[in-house]
Image 1 (cartoon, rainbow, N blue to C red):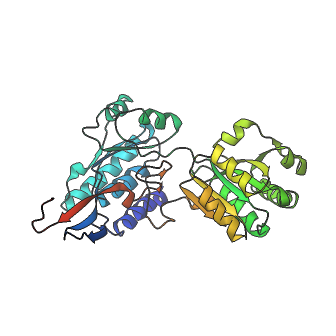
Image 2: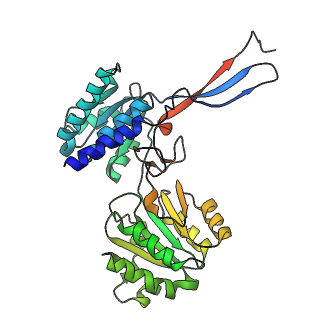
Image 3: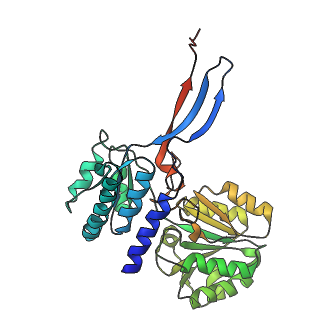
Length: 344
C-alpha cells in the first residue's frame, strides 16, 4: 500500500540521519612508555541477511548495512522476491547516484532453497549471517560455517509484583500482549505475585479478555475466572505470536526470576512494581537482552531505543545483544601511535 511504501522510505531517511559509527573513537589512552592507543569502530565486512517474508527487511537491512560501512547480501523468501527486487534496485540506484558501489547491496536472484546452503558454506566471502525468520530457518543457519548473529524466540514475560500499581499494571499488561501480537516483543506469559493474585487477576484477566485475548492459566488463575483454560507445561515454553497468553501465580520476585530464566528466551522481560529495590533485583538477575521496569515489552524495538530501524533483536551474549542497529553492525580495531618505541 502507499502507506507501507511511505513507512519504508521514512525508515531509510531516519537511518540516513543517524550518526556515522565508522571511525568513531570508542576510548583512548596513553601508556607510560608513550604509546597512544585508540579503539576505533570499523565495519564487520560482508553481512548476509536471510529472511522469509517481509520485503521491508530489504530496505532496512540495506540501509543499516550501508550506514555502518558494510556490504550486504540479501536472501529473501520466495513470496517476497518481487518486492525485495524492486527495493534492492532502488537502493542500488541511490548508491550509483551518490558515488557508492552498487555491488555493496546484492539480492540473491533465485527462489532456490539451495542458495541459503551456499551462503552458509562460504565463510571466506561472508563475515556474519543474520537470520530473520522462524525456528527452522534460524536452526539451519546456526548449523553453517559462517558466524551468526541470531534472533531467537521472543518468549517475553511481564511480572506484576505485590507492590505494583494495578492501574499501571492493567495498562502495561494489555499493551504488552495486545498492541501487536505478532511481534517478537509481545508478552507471552504473565506472572503475578501471590500476595495480590486475587485482586490483580480479577482486573487483569477481564481486561485481557475484553481486548480479545484467550487466557491459559495455572490452577490459581483458573479459580479466579472460569473462562481461563488450563495451561500445560508446553504453554510456558510457547511463543504464541497470537492473542493468547499464559498466566501463572508465583511466590514473589525470586520465583518470577527463576521461572523467566528457566522458560524464557533471553529476549525481553518486564516487572511492574513501585518498590525500587525489588525492581533492581529483577533487572540485575533476569538474564535477558532487554529488561524493563514499569514499561511494556513492546518497547523491544530499535526505533524506540533511538537506533533507527533494526535488523533484529540479538538474544545471544557475543558481540551484540538487544536491538541490532548501525553500531551493532560494527566491530573495532586498535590504532596505536608511537614515536620509535621498541619492546625491551
